[in-house]
Length: 57
Image (tube, rainbow, N blue to C red; front, side):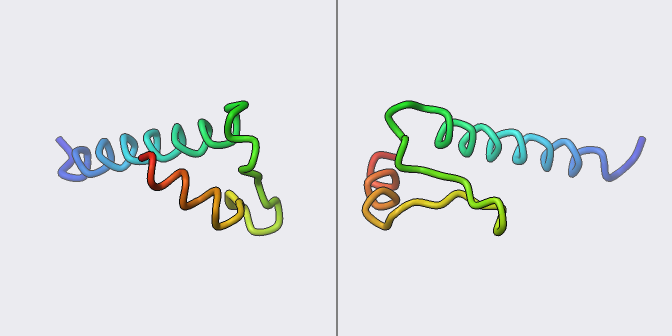
């Protein structure tokens, strides 16, 4: 058995969780203030939107 298998499985779980968070940010109608920057490849929003999102989480 590979010693790296538990590490890979953990990494895959982390990536799935992170992907789900970003997907929810961009796909929900109530979070229309979030956007995607194609050039930088990241989620963008005004500071007020981020602060509101963080306070809820």
